[in-house]
Length: 403
Image 1: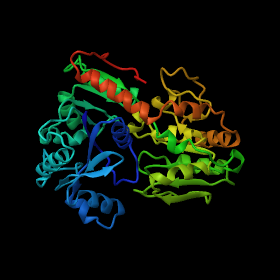
Image 2: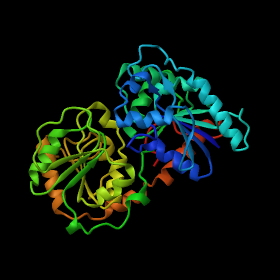
Image 3: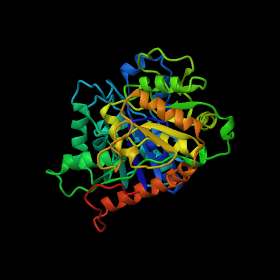
Image 4: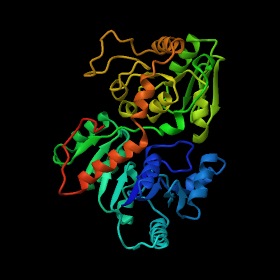
């Protein structure tokens, strides 16, 4: 199959997101995969001192396809960033036509018909909906990763929902939100959830013994979805152990205890070694509304690396009851949890972390992680997408995770 992925994050990012893993696994399964991500804009170029901008610029100028792990990756251009963009549709500087020519040359180099459309398009970035008209996309399946809350994102998502053959969300929370949105106008649209996984082979490797590991680690975004207050309480709860925070800082950092170290971004290839030095992986999620529907790959990466996990309770995380995962915060409705659950305060995060740091993992987390390998996740996503786009097959209307 020819498969197109329209994603929010390009290969130049320090983060590896679900679409990158899908591209790798679908390519390994023998499919021809093209990954197109958010465009680079003129305003981005003005910030050329930013290392992330420089990496994206090298991907986008000149616009061409970059081979990586069997797939082809591209970054188009625009005048303005996708958010906010003052124009109803992005002014693309002709990049749509250039991208079509690059794709045609790509197929010819593979000895294939350049006029044939894609057999499937998976889109997780609704703001790229304009590419559904620019490119020969074929059947479209929407794979939302968050509950969108901004008006521009919601409007773009509505356009995708009006066009797609089905929805494969990354969590049950996101699937339920989408199903409610389309209940009146597209009641027969299939909506399912297939949570993200992890590249288990990269993380499930021999590391130091538990007694030689120290402290807590976080690798990821440091934005409004991150709770610095919880990190502070974790550090105070076990003051003799380090709390290592890795990620690009995008806002002010509060005063923190001396055992908290902020290291900046870490390349994905180095993350397994970083994890292996620690006892506990933390997910200090804030009350930002998008966190409720997140399906964090980091959960299974931590577990595969032999760490215990401490995280703020969300519906998606509460659905994974494991001895090696300690959640803090109020109980989630319908999750069968005790009403006496530790209250949602930073102090609760500290208490959960102190307990997790003192007890070796049971091993149930590592076992669960192995079942979430991206090779299985990609096969399940593709199977669901085929059912949605093949009139001879059928899928249930909504709701529970497909696996």
